[in-house]
Picture 1 (tube, one colour):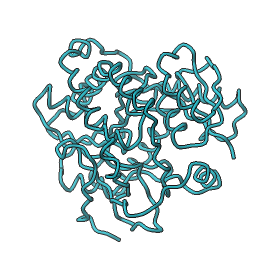
Picture 2: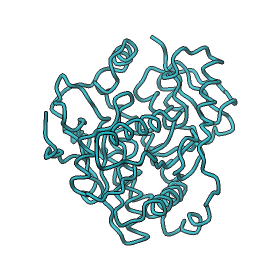
Picture 3: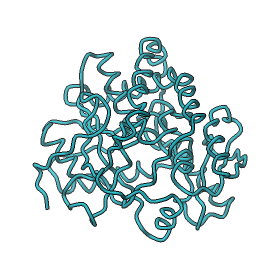
Length: 365
């Protein structure tokens, strides 16, 4: 059992002042599993966090689509970043604020929020990226590390988007567990850029639009993999692990992504100030859509239903999809979904009875 003085490994391709990853570098291990094999293992009981998917290597057309999407949505992203950053400031103040993004989808969003607060308020708040794993909770060693270095920390958890709210619920349970055994207390409020699941109070938008960082894997997330927790080769009490894909440095767009959106802050300031909503109460409307999909398509396991653009993209990049549902009302946002579905020969079906623009359904093996 390791002590609280354990230190994380230096990893990631972001600027050092943008984020500190509280992770153990397991790059020396080969734990990537081919998609079909990994899916079979997950469906037969192996936890998804014990192995990694093979990193998707995008085609030239797909990379070009990423750049076009980034240009198209940079302003919309900048507005959503500003809106959520202002709410975080209002809730926590800036004096003891510590941003804690959930690796890895939360990491670029945490970097952007930190950059916005620096740009608008000339305050550089600490930002860490830590692991949370569905069914296994949050990395408590990382939380202990943060409180050790920031005893008065007002921790604000940050993620990229909500799907059906599994991580929202996981975070609440994890914070309750942590608070029972520790003097320092956590508040489980999750801040996200987009909340199509309607399951958080702090968000930039509830539109289910394409967050360009959802299009790619490590090459838009600081070259860091998904997080891993496997005690066959990891030590209890240590940080959760991740791989640092240094070999992909020549195709890394992590900092380009951040810089492109940051450049828009000045032009969207009035839109940020104008976008206050009165009622931010979570209605969990997304979960109701998931239940309708489950019933309509006779799906036994709700884990097979992955709603929203971000989650649907993940299904296409690293799971075995059965079909993709698209809501034609939003089809202008789904070019990359249709491209990936075509690449992988996955059927696409129109379905309007959902609050999401699309939904990925995993194939039962």
